[in-house]
Image (cartoon, rainbow, N blue to C red):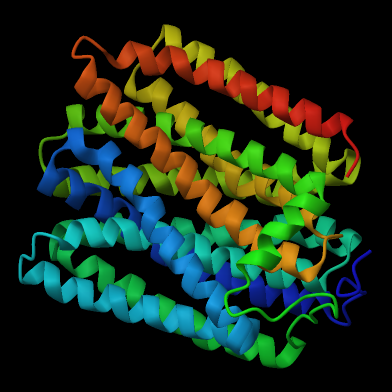
Length: 408
């Protein structure tokens, strides 16, 4: 076991700190996610939504580059604090620019919301993975994810209740305030529990890119996780695109669409809470994390076949809801346990490459593929993407099965 993962003196307080941070950050994300999606479609058209998904990874890559520089120079405590505060300021400024009708603001918001959520959330998990033992993680990760979903539920409920009254332009400022609050709490958490120790073998290069990439050569597990994450996000991009298409066909008013979307994500959070508080602790106590990684695509494959034969807002919404609920609970918790025996650079650098850049790059590449295919082949319809979804989920199942049978 890695030296940082010794028995924590007060794991419950550590879990509560991380849960509170996750809840606050995800509350802000639920507010900005539906808002940014609606603004992009309203300003640039639904047909350009996949293009925005394709450009998003470039923004994530830029922020990960800055993250690595900050991590090498200032350490994990100050990096988390600084990134939280700067993202908060950026969202508050975005509210002002929306009121001034700056045409580029929806695109900037869309990319910022994709970058900030993965960058902050993965830092919380990297810290937790460095402080808890595996037994502590199996006990507390479900609760942490569950409290996070309560924040998502609160954010979605708040959004749906106020957006029609105040308008989309004020919503980014709420996310900004929550980011600043999270930064203050995270600094206090790091002071109380201490920064994770960096192994003597880790170098202090100016950016740390070399340290992060070198871990992939040493640990096959990291390569397996990367392939699984890339595949899951191709599925996410496909299902998200199909869901957004159905939404746009059902609603003509942007504010009504945002309000309905907020209610949908509220129900998604309820489903995630059930999985996090009930399903995840039970399964983690009974079966291995790698086995759980196999069960998830098995379930989604069945639903995706149903969607291919019976496409509708209900069926696509069901697939999207199940995918996200599993992603926020079973998939997240079981995946984080896989990182726990790995060294500092794997947790803080390689993990960001996988769970931040990998998530957005794969989703963005699929967005570019969708848009490029539709421009090149005019006769290409939604049926193509409906049929492609179960095929890709089947490949995800194959990768998870292969990881189950492999050694670390």
